[in-house]
Amino acid sequence: MPLDARLKSEFASLWRDAAELWDRHEADAAFEGYVGSDFTAALAVLESYQDRAATFLEWGSGLGVVTIMAARMGFEACGIEVEPELVEWSEWLADKYQADARFACGSFIPDDFTPDPRVGDEFFRTATDSPAGYDQLDRELADFDLVYAYPWPDEHRLFGSIMRRRGGRRSVLIRYDNREGITVRRCGMAKRRQR
Ligand SMILES: C[S@@+](CC[C@H](N)C(=O)[O-])C[C@H]1O[C@@H](n2cnc3c(N)ncnc32)[C@H](O)[C@@H]1O
Image (cartoon, rainbow, N blue to C red; front, side, top):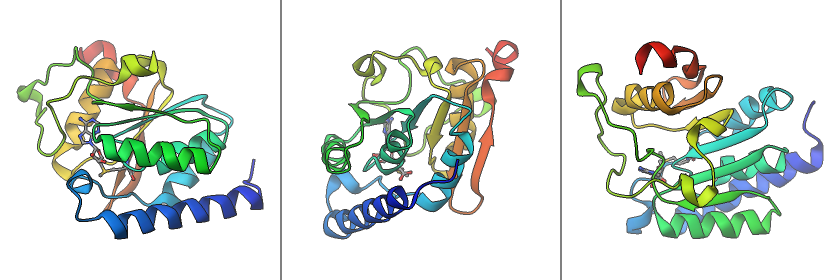
């Protein structure tokens, strides 16, 4: 179903607000690990899942833009972000755009996930010192059909590992990278073999 003009112009305004927040706060400590993804590309992939998925989670949701778009498009949408200041801005934007999006302040790494360095599970810039945010949402990672993430280049394998081992059997990882763009992978299918 193509997006209506009203929603498109609402999203253009949301993207402008996020860009302005970035310009004003770029130097703040809370924004140190934040880089916004390509929201046009994220929107296109959300549109392609509109009739095929119900639940959406953004790992490291930053200013919450992708989660807010997902909520406005009818997904049950949640974001988990470790920086409290970014969560506050996300909630402010969600309120402004009347999005029924929920944000947890915590880590997207499930508490029961143990990285396995033998398969290349290494953390580089993802924060590892906060408890997981899933309980705040009353959800588990496996409850989400779609998981959106913008990993640092060296953490792609790690993000795939978390999904394979803790994601739902049919969950899809949508990954943004500034060189490769969006890639979509159904990680849960390999779950049994790699656990
Ligand atoms: C590259 S930015 C992506 C922002 C947003 N997802 C987007 O695509 O526009 C990564 C975000 O992950 C957050 N982050 C880092 N480690 C995290 C963790 N363990 N749990 C939750 N958020 C984390 C950072 O604070 C930052 O906002």
